[in-house]
Amino acid sequence: MQVKLVAFDLDGTFLDDDKNIPPENLLALEEAAARGVVLVPATGRIVRGIPETIKSLPAVRYFIVSNGAGVYDAREDRLVHRADIPLALALRCYEYLDTLPVLYDCYQDDAGYMTASMLERAPEIFGKFPPMLQMLRELRRPVPELKAYLREKGRPLQKLQAFFREEDYPLRAELLQTLPQRFPELTPTTSVPFNIEINSAHAGKGKALRALCALLGIPPEQSLAFGDGTNDRELLELAGFGMAMANADPAVLAAADGVTGDNNHAGFAEGLRRMLQA
Image (cartoon, rainbow, N blue to C red):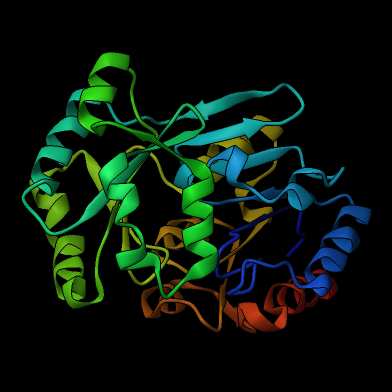
């Protein structure tokens, strides 16, 4: 296939487990850019949570963010596509999560928010993952109580997350199945072992990719996508060719068109070069 656009997840895909970028991955991006390929990070993060090394790449203009709730144009500093969660729906979801042993947060207008008492308890869950705990503390603004804060702002959300202690992982697995039944307007996915990421059912990395392809006049069949978590599955399915990382979730591996190496050994660079050479 002729590759005109490459969309790639960050955590667990382009970044290693310590949240560093393997040098070979950057070199592979430069090689693709030299061929005129459009490069699109596709992440569950907000824009300000994307590593500066990636944001500063001259060849990267568009970003799929918040699991496809937005497509950001860095040149124009605006979202060119968005699929938000209405505030009333988000509040109903939070009220349900209040009945469960979880911590939760939200992304709204390119900022993260979390109830201060929950943020203080974050080491209970993130303690075994120091880089992620550091990122949480850097990107979440503590507020006295999240639901009250959101009611006061009166704005829709891009994404909300629930976080689980290890002993509650069975509950996490159950909620991934039952949340869509309780809230049909929402879609739960996951990117790390202890979270659930909840977006509008109208959002999704794959839907955002199709919207961006339409904007750029690139046939989706000429797009290549890389990912590892269930929040990447739709992206891999809707791209012309979906490449799963060796460390990917089994459901993602099953949905992919091909598999490359793992994220700790520059599997992204390996897969991208293979496809460009082909």
